[in-house]
Length: 272
Image 1 (cartoon, helix red, strand yellow):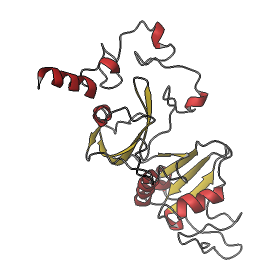
Image 2: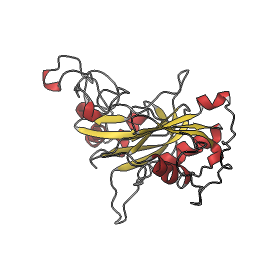
Image 3: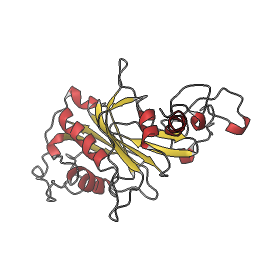
Image 4: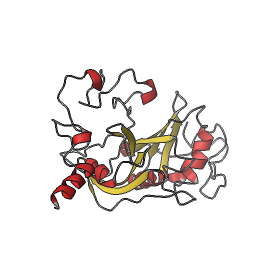
């Protein structure tokens, strides 16, 4: 149901107070405009356990942390699966603001279990790369990203309250275009190490097969790290190797001549 529905409590304003509701029996008057259908966001809850309620999402994610006003949103609807919520915006500017803010808060406890999809593609975005190891050098991650985007600023590597870096890198990038903006995969595998890539407007896809209709824990297939194809493991692979780092055929990540490890070894050997 939308903010204009009479059911339930009225939404809260950014200050935390109940938004002014229309007089009893008089619905909120907001006529439909054709552009509303092209200005949508879908919030997908990917955490464990029961998803938050619609009231929680409205108060905690939309109005208190996103710098939105009720007037920016045409409708806010909880979908039947109870894990997804659709927003239609009245204008493009607040939608883009919402994407940027939701992304910048991606590591915040309120946002970490949410994926955000949108009809609007953002050319310049802040992109987060998360690896569950510290053994991947910045140079390798940047080589991979340059296949899909131009890196505009060096990475920001946030630390926790103790001063320890926890594996997150943030980049400001400009997406490549070939008639349309090229999507960056939401997962990255470099040898045995797996990482995640998050950016505003990204479509949620399976970490393993990149399918749009399920998550990795539900994926029925396997992926070969040697050739990148689905349906078999590397130990029985008969295909030509494809590098997950540079994208070239004929070698794997472990022997990539463009990797930081191989280039460093070459420099040490030749003095170049």
